[in-house]
Structures are given as C-alpha cells and as structure tokens.
Image (cartoon, rainbow, N blue to C red; front, side):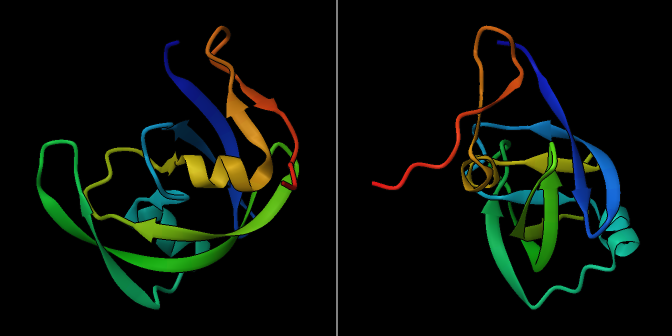
Length: 114
C-alpha cells in the first residue's frame, strides 16, 4: 500500500501529516506544532512506542480539518515525534475516511449509523 500523507488543519494552521492506520488514536503532534497551534494539554496518557518504550503524552482538544471535513479531536503531544503530525484511525473514522489500499489515498466513505 505504501505511505499515505494528508493535509490537516489544526486550530487553523495547516500541516502535512502521515496517516498511520496502525495507530489507535486520533492525532499525535510534535511539541513545535502544539505550541504553534496553541494546544494546552489537560491530562497525560501513557503510550507504547514501536520500539517498546513507554512514554507520556500530553492530551489536548483541538478543531481538526481533513479535506474540508471538520471535527473536534483529542490531540496527543509527543516531544520525540520525528514529524509534524500523525493521523490515527479514530480521526479517520470520526470524519468518515479510510485509506484505499490500492491507491494509498484517503477515500471518503461517509458516516454510517448502525
């Protein structure tokens, strides 16, 4: 499938984000992005990184927009993030998107009420 990137807007600021379908969260941002977007953490959360280390992230809430679709999302702040923004599956689901495995692009499937 390859690597998927998407443009994301957080609190009115635009960033290029890596889409990670293996991340069971909404968004993770670097400390720099958090400061630029004015994010204020209201709690912390423990996360296990791919290398097995356990780290604490600050958790804030922000207005997030992907491809013109807007929602409020929990945004985790990770000092060691080697990129600006990581989008997880919960944010994609909240906005009605999936990654098309053939093209590696975001595809709007809409929201289903079951």
